Image (cartoon, rainbow, N blue to C red; front, side, top):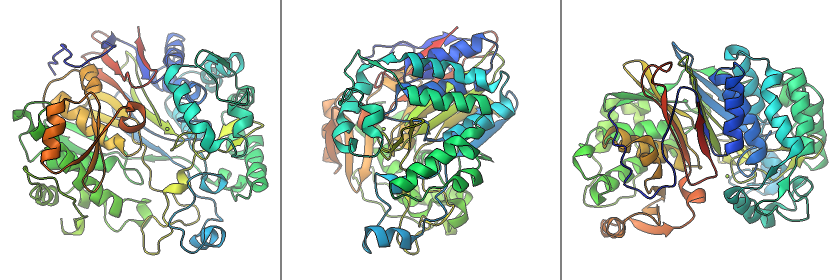
Amino acid sequence: MNFDFNNPYLSTRLPVFARNVVSTSHPLAAQAGLRILQQGGNAVDAAVATAAVMTLVEPVSNGLGSDAFCILWDGKKLHGLNASGCSPQAWTPDYFRKKYGADAATPPQRGIDSVTVPGAVGSWMALSERFGKLPFADLMAPAIEVAERGYLMPVVVQEKWAAATPLLQSQPGFAQSFLPWGRAPKVGELFKFPSAARALKAIALTRGEAFYRGEIAQALEKFSAEHGGSLKASDMAAWKPEWVEPIARNYRGHTLHEIPPNGQGIAALIALGILDKFDVGSLPVDSVASQHLQIEAMKLAFADVYRYVADPSSMEVTPAQMLDDAYLASRAKLIDVNKAQDFKAGNPVKGGTIYLTAADESGMMVSFIQSNYMGFGSGCVEPTFGISLQNRGHGFSLKDGSPNQVAPGKRPFHTIIPAFLTKDGQPVMSFGVMGGNMQPQGHMQTLVRMLDYGQNPQAACDAPRWRFNAGLEINVEAAMKGDTVAGLKALGHQVEVINDSYQDFGAGQFIWRAGDPSVEGYVAASDARRDGQAAGY
């Protein structure tokens, strides 16, 4: 790909060129990954070490109680890992209706009854065992050091920490763990997390077994029971991550790969499959016409995703049916280039997350994402080991007949999605964009910029984004040109201009293979919407 390295957008960052590189949303985590690479580890080792540090330095987005997904190129082949947790065996629709009322539509948004089995630590175990080079304990060492010695509070994380405090300070364990002075830390204050250091040491010593079948699992059961929850050590022990075959869709001579459902990565594939029916590149890059087509394609994708995607065992249709070319062509015909529309689901049968990426000079590339879902997840923190628990259970439905209805040992609909790009069967880019339903929208928008318009990864990352919400409603970043915003409004889009880029528009990390990794290496980008860094050597 011949990129234009003149960045047309206001940016404080330049692309990073290196043969070994890690990109994520906190510099200490990126540097932990580099430290592992310099010790002789590979990209998987670096990714695991980086992920462990991220649970400490960006707890607003992830923690030791997170879920995770990964797509990686091992040098010859692409692999997918689904490490999203399952519901406790006690969870049924009646369980929630008896506790929260017959009219409850979903499990609660926060609190102990929003917690499913955490999968992130299991993903570290699985990745290290299958692809790692260094001892697992070595990969935990940087995180243990950060937890014990502490780190100075960065700007963006502090802002989100303070914003979440009034909502979550009454949740069990939250104040004890995250309000060390009876308040959120201030920018530049030293935050230590000794209980998480205790957990990380146990995880390191047992290669993760303590988390799922040992003292941490027992502590989580006790904590859950004390606060009215139903998560048990047996739920932890019964769960395991699943190696999966990524699903894919061709676009402009490249192939985008995503994790299959229960995740929403298929939304990006559907949207690109619809956009493929239009000559997007003939339209000016930031024009109303180009943005309108992308928005409408994304809306059509979400209409189907929200209707059909769930745990694969409960889905009415297959991913292949949802991605059928004839079906996507029929959906593309619904787009009116002169008017915004509120699309409904079709019938395919007829046809507060962190992201990191690492690559090494041997050619191994890792696309990894882990999340507590909403900011600080459930808000519940097991105090002995500092396990900040996700709230993925809120992603279930209690509605009878829904493919996503809660059931024992079931995975909920998931928003976090890593991505990977290939060309002619060879690796091109590992990447991801964080932020709820912004993730497939970010995948599509940044890929269109790179593949249709030749923008380099940092420029594609810096460019102003839009975010579809529901109906005709979209948010746009304040940096978007005024005439583009006005033009979208004229087409019927209900546009709200938002200043909070972190909350509404996600943050991306990108590693593009420039050639032979041992010679040319990679081009890496990190999103200025967070405190992150792309670092390499």
